Image (cartoon, rainbow, N blue to C red; front, side, top):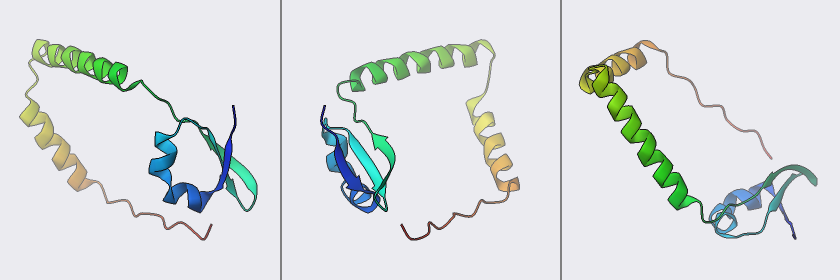
Length: 94
């Protein structure tokens, strides 16, 4: 299978096209390969079915344990407010 070689900026700019393609991409930085992107096709239906099944199992577990979702959300929000916000790291020049 043929691999397309692109720089990291080009990869970032053309991400949508690379995702839609079936061709693997070798991502380079200063001419050196730093990673590979291998798009997958046709798994969306299986992924959605697995997520739905996991959701059903989670709903059953929560019901069995009599967990109040509103209470969980309230506790989560309170915990997030107590945790200091993380600063975003700025990426240096590529």
